[in-house]
Image (cartoon, each protein chain N blue to C red):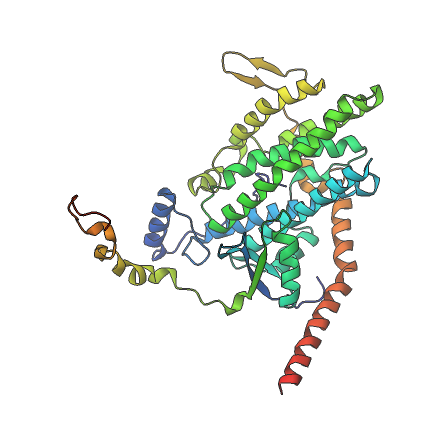
Length: 96
Length: 331
């Protein structure tokens, strides 16, 4: 109710185990990236949920526009020839 | 810990004509069980309902740290103390997940916290009851967190993506809360005569307020219909309350404790427990701010906020200094 400068928002990504991708888990406020890492550790890994943390200022993320989803993703729908199941291979042909 | 169906206030203007087709599209998506994400178009009433519900839920987690936090310094053993600290820390974490989810709807965390501290925001009525003995900590874990789980599990499937995902995380952690509470009750119930009496008295204090956590009866619930149509709420207050009673009575029996309801009995025909009337007058009073601890809880939150101001200021100043140094080095 006093100091009116809200700390910036960071998005948090956690790698659950070696070999897996970092995955978005949520967001938090912090004064800087270092504090964001510390808070992410307390907030998102209290039960060994991760072995590595990434934090990214939320303002740095550019997202695709949901209203353009059709224009972006529809064109892929009629290109089923990109999938191996599109091709009918005779049973006699093996290891293909 | 939990939101209650106290989703109150909020009359919203009808949608303008050009929004009608978008609203129809939106309702169709909900109907198909698609998740709504923050950047998707949504009716203003859906947004307002969610901001209200998620922020009330977040406030409940934060205020919910107080009744139990009250016992951290007096927990009977080091292990119980460690467990209680972990539980209270979880509640703080749950509040943080939920504030984040609410923020995706375009409201700032500072606004929400200001509303709480100004006494304008609601939070679950249950946290306005006192915890006079150690057994109350057990009863809260068992009953209050138990009721919370009952409410929160369906919320994992709620139509708003960020809320649903936060609830998945919360529910995963909540089971520990309920079990540690039951474990406390079990120990006391198997202990000395005094310990058993302590457990019984705590159960007497928390049983009815726990039933009130599910919110007013369906017949009087004002927001039920919209929330159910939008798949924010999947079951009615009365349905969840009944389920809670059916689950909890056998647990109380196992403890050898008596639920403080002389009318409670098994209805064999309907395969459920019937219970006595709930004192909704008490519930209304607590919601209006006249519960045993309303003033105390708000005072504690305000004090924590103002006494923590220097920490926030120092952290901001430090971050600015680091930034200045970094840019000086770069120059």
